[in-house]
Length: 260
Picture 1 (cartoon, rainbow, N blue to C red):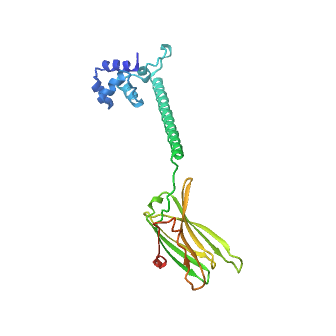
Picture 2 (tube, rainbow, N blue to C red; picture 1 turned 30 degrees about the horizontal axis):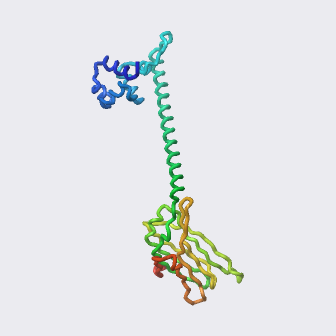
Picture 3 (cartoon, helix red, strand yellow; picture 1 turned 180 degrees about the horizontal axis):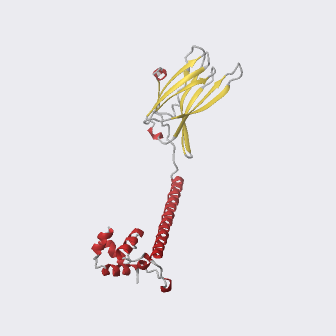
């Protein structure tokens, strides 16, 4: 006798219709019908509810044979029921784990294939509206440079920083390279930041580069390049290569360095 036939037999002994049994278990009549036709198997909690409703043990419901000479008292049957429940729960957990691992491998494999067929690309010149200000100090030979970058929303989720490269002269020696990277945080799709005390040397370019990366993909965009020419002489700000930066707007805004 199958499990479905056993459920049907016990239901009829109780004088219950499929609909009445479904109401007691909180399932539909169609679910009871599928169980009895062996089209589906009740979940563990429903098996327990069925055994209690029919007044039989899980062994009896599932027709697990116990030799008559080893017939167990009620306490032992309850213990066997608990062990069976734990076994069924463990089986369900194992099946769920296998499904999750399988799904994870499937998603990972799909991403690998997509990266090969359609490799991710870094945004090209994401900062198109650049405001800057700079204030040199000729006594300390350092300069403060501030930026406001509008509408860089496409870099949300990317690791962003600025790289500062200049030359500093220490105690009359030959100028040495100053190369520092500073992290930048986006707020509402824009970035405003100030780089302070950047050392400089006359006729040595001060370059500031916008860098961004995500995973294995990275790129960079020049923001500012200027040449200090001498004390009290206006710095020569070099425009970003006009061939590659059509549509890039650079505007000097001294207010960026004014006290707030």
